[in-house]
Image (cartoon, rainbow, N blue to C red; front, side, top):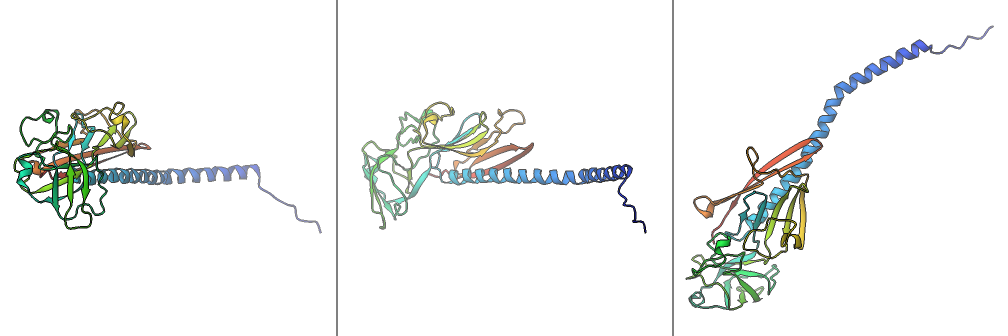
Length: 291
């Protein structure tokens, strides 16, 4: 018997199969391309939203711990500055301390436990009623407080009493003399360095800057001292857009003291862009400025 003749695909059959497979692949690409692109876009937006939300939460947490009346925002809305409070409480009133120079204050309760107090650099503040500006840096009225230029701020020389029912804070003789002290008997221990949040348009970055010298006028130049010499500069968000504030462009930071500074409001706005996607988040933070 003669063997069966082996058969294979003809060229026309192979071409037909290739064409059919190509048509199917094109159809799959058309129908699946948008969902796949949508997935990557959604993932990029979710990642940016997480970064923006984390940054805004960090700002909110810091501002809620700011010294009352120390928050200030520059005219461009790109820079936010405040003095962070390390600890605080109430003190025992000694009327003599507020009619003449007083070198120490005793608190009601332990403020030192689990708080690192740095003698020689940390500051004490009582009854700071006024917002900080250059005009307050040479006060002629007793009781005017300006944390940034140093008037009415006492530098701690020593602190004692950790783990007890009270603490004693000692400071130099050139201290504040608010008349009558504080009606609420509140005392604040604050870090010597302010904190600045800056939206850097050139780098597209939201920075948190600390470890620089207090200034009467709010510093707004990242390339110049004191911000350029700060010991800490941390990027909270990259790919941040910082357009010039104008028509239709909201400020990055907006601060309003309202009718009563007790109910001040800070608005923080952040916009991030990546992979052709844009995410904008706004957070409004209540600032309690009761001294």
